[in-house]
Length: 99
Image (cartoon, rainbow, N blue to C red; front, side):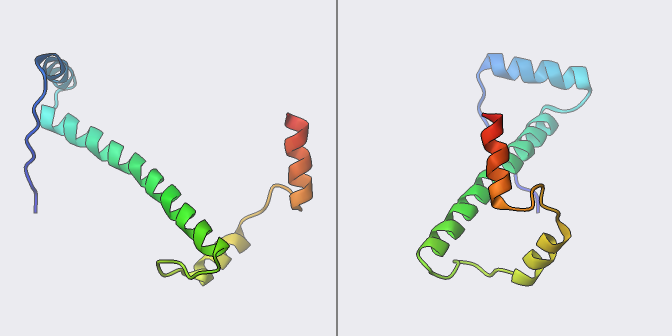
């Protein structure tokens, strides 16, 4: 089900939005919706960082994760990936050379 959202814009912002919509041949609503979708996708990255941080804290405190983890899926993904360096020591050496 679709919902409607009303937004108040100052006249300058509204005029810019209208100009771009007319130039692209789309509605103002379409532009706002697409930009909002893009913004929300980017915020998923912040959610992923938050999730990663909560996992790290759980591991450090030897506590279970606050969500279900499909360890088998993670193992399969890791098995399919190829590390760039054969060991952590070699990765560290590479990082030090770059500095």
